[in-house]
Length: 115
Length: 113
Image (tube, each protein chain N blue to C red):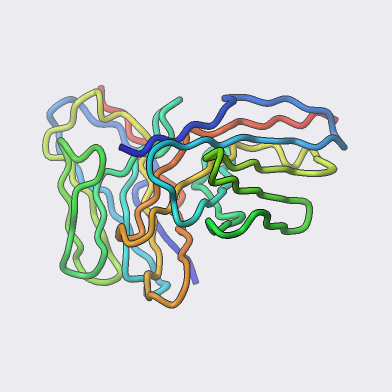
């Protein structure tokens, strides 16, 4: 199993450009999450999807949109990138099957710079 | 809203000593508290989970305590090694919140030989 994969690993954008960050998991997990990580701020939840077909806002959703394409894939889109969106973006997934507690499995991250 | 703080941004200790990291939270009591390790350039990796009705949990050289009265969790690494150097994150799991976690800002541990 590859676990959680993210593409691209690095990206540089100019202000106003758009892009989509891709995330996929092969663990048959129900729930998926997008976080951003900034120095001294910890991980902050942008959007999450509790199950295929549903998405909800997290703590910092402004400037982002998401799509839960199927059970495996959860993408994050920046429609008009701003320098404040320079960050490291992590995707994570959990089973949420109700059997027990679930810990989050994280991808390797996407390092985004907006000039 | 829920707030979680890790007491130190950085902690430097000598190899062989015990590292103790602190995580404090406010407001609602979480159902579970989780600890993750993050190495530079990588995503966090789960280490331990402790439930609100558990006082202590151990895994090899790791020990976590959970005091719901003090609203605090302590994370200990005994007989620390340079390979333990990393950033450690605590996270609150509120239960019935769609699996969402609230993360602290992390403590960067450096173990010197």
